[in-house]
Length: 293
Length: 293
Image (tube, rainbow over all chains, first blue to last red; front, side, top):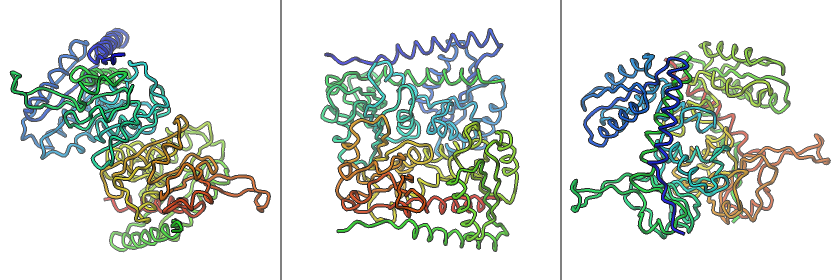
């Protein structure tokens, strides 16, 4: 059986269409236009490109969108002042701070200043605490997108062995917390691996579901994967490639060509997890808008 | 080599002595007497006994202690009113709600109402979010106590395989979050198992450190444990025993007699994790008192 290639673009489009419906309904029934504010500091090309995609996605879903673009030398105080303003702005239901921020700014301090009710990214401590407790709240976008991709495969998640490679605050730890819950599309036996884990292949080979989120190009090779596993590749790595016009190509954390044939299902890079993140961001914003009284 | 029996009572006493020193220092340097408030509803004998121990521990550490004992038919509104009062009370630096609450009261709603700065139990979503993120904050008492017990064994935690049996909000999930962090006495490869996990013994036998927190008497047998493992038993289960005056005896989640000989170190029940929880509660309260401005 050839592996199922998980079409993140298509699944994300479906979610964005649902979001657009919810937006239309909120406008009609309650006169609310869900609004997302994005704060970006500096001119990191990848960040600028993400922010542009987010704005376009908002607009095509009929949402209000506002952008605060600061220079790379913006101060923490300036960013905090904008957050305070957005926390109070009734047109804004979701606030996203594009990471990474310039090094002189304390990211935690900025994130913690966001009103948790407007935490569209789901990475405020209140949101993560609610996630760990298993009570409702905005879920971090990439983990929530991963869960949707897993659901789309039809493979059982409940009772399965999940191995998460990487323990970042925006992917590894929250996706582990999400999939270990006693809940729908969860209830898995989850292991989190990282730089200090020993004998990694012996652990990853036990995974029915392997989630690679370490930011290391093509780190996961065929010998690390069990036959029939579902593999979700969260990596977005640029590797030099003279044959490309841009001089680089984007690869995931998984050596796709050799891993895919062993898999039941696998998400490609690009076109897997990437598109889901924006879709879940819109979803969280509309959910937040619906909760306003 | 006979196993090391981890003496939680002794380790807890040391922590309580440190706490008493910190209390004395805070009194002298800043005129602050750390204060803990405990709320209890109903007359569950185990809960009443815990609350009594907590009061005595506070007093012997030189702390201020206040207790709000409500009847089993107390309303949610009444409990919330007391919490609001304690949130504003400058003498109180830590607020503990003795769980379980009577069934008609929504525990989450009560816990979430506590000012996170006074979350002595470390189970407010803000505290759990900070734990998952790896930023400072009050840590849940039982997980923090488990970490201290592990530290006391001298066995390496970094790089080890940890298996947690159970995914409760006060032990399983937070202790997993704690031990997977890139931090001192952590940095482990953590797996969380629960009622839906399949082929449990094959997973638990991989554990260098096994933490049993499922609330099932003597669930962990010798065949589930690797030779040389460190075993932490979080269970406190009453099983009928006609030979005892009370008609029952207390056992853990581990079949101690058959598991202990295989272990490098093991915590007994009672006298293992139990005494640590109160010690960490006092510790959190004094830390909170020290942060008041």
